[in-house]
Amino acid sequence: MKKNMKEAANKAQTNPNENAAAAVIAAAAIVEPTATAEAKPEGQPEPKPEAKPAKKQPKQEKNPGDAFEDAQLAALERQREIEAKQRELQHCLKDLENKKKLSEDRSKFIDTLDRLEEAEKQMNPQDFESKAMKLTLHSVNEGTYRSDFSASISNSGLILEFIAMLKKKILAKIEELEAALVK
Image 1: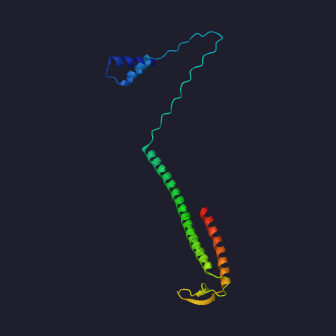
Image 2 (image 1 turned 180 degrees about the vertical axis):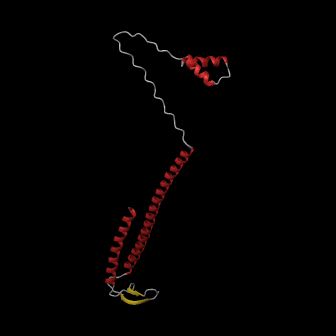
Image 3 (image 1 turned 60 degrees about the vertical axis):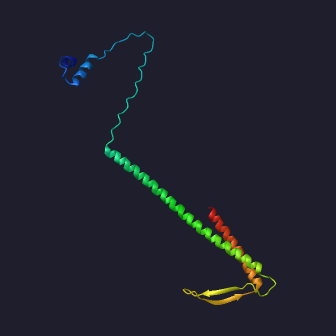
């Protein structure tokens, strides 16, 4: 083998048109390292050979199709994240709409409570029949705007008791709505 390498080196020197591969082979043959034995003193441990850094694995070149697949996977992952955020936003929107309705209901109860307190101030508990207030019950026919008269109460004591009972119920409902709004 050495003989073939030397011949290749001679050809490369004599014929400059030889290919570069022959010149490289020839150069390798000439510069071939030789093993030398060193004498070591007795009783001394043998020196450890120096650790050579591990050769890095050459990166595999990615196929253009692989890059496309990676981009598709990344886009798919982003799409999933977007859909998850959209579901979360839809849930928050439903919760917000529900709280808006609860707030509107609370406002109606507070308005009714204010009107009941005004009515209570107008009542005189000593009057048997109140001239300022009358509690009337109507039955409504379904599908029409007309109502039929059912009953009327004008006793101040009964009306005041009814207002007090309604105020308690309304205050309890307002507290319930406020607790739901805070959640």
